[in-house]
Length: 231
Image (tube, rainbow, N blue to C red):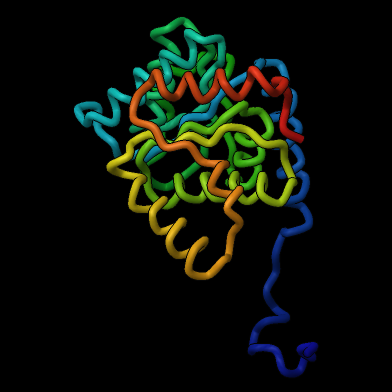
């Protein structure tokens, strides 16, 4: 039903926005991101909580995973902030690999970590632009324990692959204790009880515990498929 002007909430017509002008800023972020990211080469995105402290075992595991990724010829992309993101960039840096940070302007949590290559630090105001960069230029997602943002990235990637909007790439969950319950629920509830997904959708996800298993999944996949941007 169309809402006629006389039935709109009081003051609605007086609201002024700059929505049309925001398009230019959005386009600018896309252009800058595409130009810089297209020059970097094959990378793997490492996701996880910004709240994970350096003394947390998952922080050190993310460092080791990212070192292995870099040692095997991939760059590492993170969200550029603290926690698991910092650990991912640190691992790539320690291995002498490419270390990319896609920073987002937030009122809390987010600040650049010191392990990003100086020429590979990008800043974004818009989450959706940043997420496009993660998906387009990643050859795989390595998902460490995290919160809502990590889950958002994980399920968006699964959805895009499931609907054939992007090419298939490895999605690797690291930490069976953390992720096992979620995967059990996906299988028992989404698949078996309600049939909201297909059995083959489960095959998109790999659950591992060690850096060696992460590399095994990546290498096995790219023995069969060509490295390339995802759309």
